Image (cartoon, rainbow, N blue to C red; front, side, top):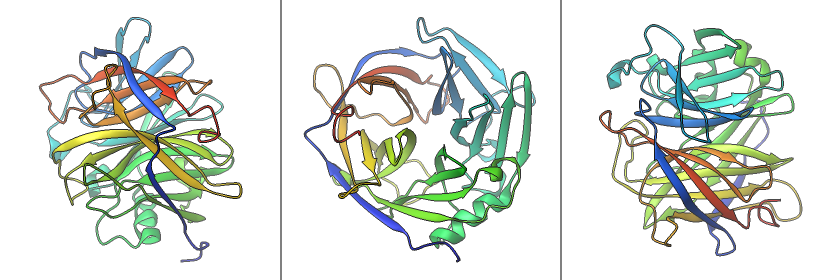
Length: 301
């Protein structure tokens, strides 16, 4: 490998942070929510079980399907594209990335206005696997753009760390995925179950917010019992780089025991949106409005 040595951030629960669900509503037709984007005054919910996404009016939850390929219907697990990460560029282009956890899950969907292109990019996932020295395929759960870099995030399982891998932004359109850096995230555990990264958003230079779930599985592909989720933040710059998180709770203070996979943070960092993944094709996911405390201060930058 020709990239620089990995940077490692270790995180744990932080009483200075709070995250709680303010309100929630079911999303008809969104059976496997895996990522969430804010685009203009709408939200875009990403599905991992179909070549489909769903536009959502956050004011009333009205859904509008966006078919990416074929009829957009939900697919059985062996055939699903497993879109797990999403990002938008400055010019409004939207990219959805498959997890890469199987050879059939290496697709990228590019959305430019009314035009959608879906293409495979197996070299991207091979580069992530090689950069992290993984014995199995990677499981990409998040992606962000930072200047001219694409950073994709692998979800660790069974105690293995989650990680970010830097690639050229041109990789999104089929360019060569030359690895430029690696970030290892030791997220700790919730109720003695290791946390695995489920989504990431940029807060500012060197600062990020993330969600992670405590899912009891050693396999990045297989589902397992979920003890709950956390919302956190990390900083890679300054004299004391580090990461911090808080358990996601309901408004009454009781712990949320669901798996959340998509995160949008408001500009003031005092609230945002989450989307749940039920891992059940018979149950619709939910859009959750959340409150945040501590993310606008020192911890969140």
